[in-house]
Image (cartoon, rainbow, N blue to C red; front, side):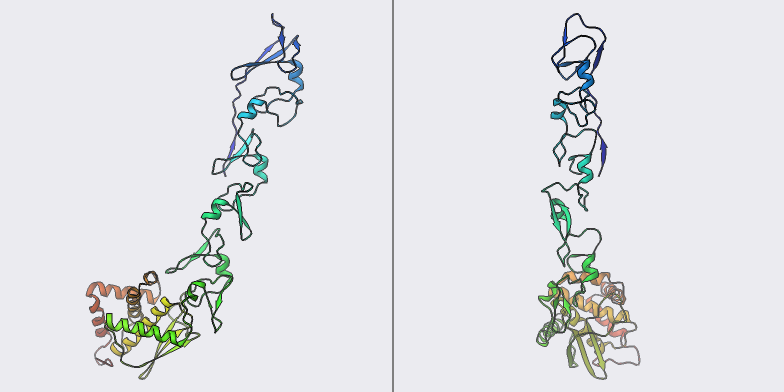
Length: 379
């Protein structure tokens, strides 16, 4: 808020006469003939003569200094008729503004009293004029900020100050929801003050709840879709039977502290098991099933990859291909920016693809995943 001092140049010329003029002067305020000293005030296109008595006894206009009828000497807030008409008006009280005043970003003028006593919008700093502000979550905002400020995706409150966002997902979130409401078991974004609870007690946000994975029948359908897509479009087929389990929790991921583990491939001798977390949204269920099926394919075709970056990077690369095929492009953005073994590995496989092409990635995985002295299960 910029404070400005009002600079007014009064266009008044005061002529002091110490002797009566040849023609009799009459005071323009009291109407009496003047004998002795008088004052002449030159206004815009006229002049006003004031006798000594009126000059001494009346209040003076705060802007131009001319004595004002029906006032008394020393009275504050006095304005003559001309200055009252021409002065700027306070946007709150409507009174003429003189002396010290203030303006807001909209160039509206406020007298010092109204400015000191009025509330200000906490976002833009504008004065909250009567009838032009709204209350949001107990906070007064100007109508413009109430309309234009970002709102929390979880509680819909206007966001003032810092906020959080989650790569690959829509919306920004206020610090109150981030700190005080449960994280969605699917997307890990704040659920807000009214989370939706699954049968196992897990909280999901309203976005993920519409397609949340809740039962084995849903999981069977998604596995069929993903496995069919991978066989038709990626030429990947896992021959070993796989037991799919819908679980409440998945073992802690030793590779990442910032991402919740949503699936797990387990191989015990010749038995394959894939665990999928209950509550995942359809896009995340598809990504997770594709990732874990890629691990199963690795177990059959390249079981001895030299590092976790190859193991997890290839699975993420396959998950990315499936996400693209199903049209879930927004989740691909997360894969590019992860800074853990999954993200580094994904970018490593992308480099191999750029160098050797799509089929070259599979050939390279089989080559380095079957060093001399080791054989793959199916090739």
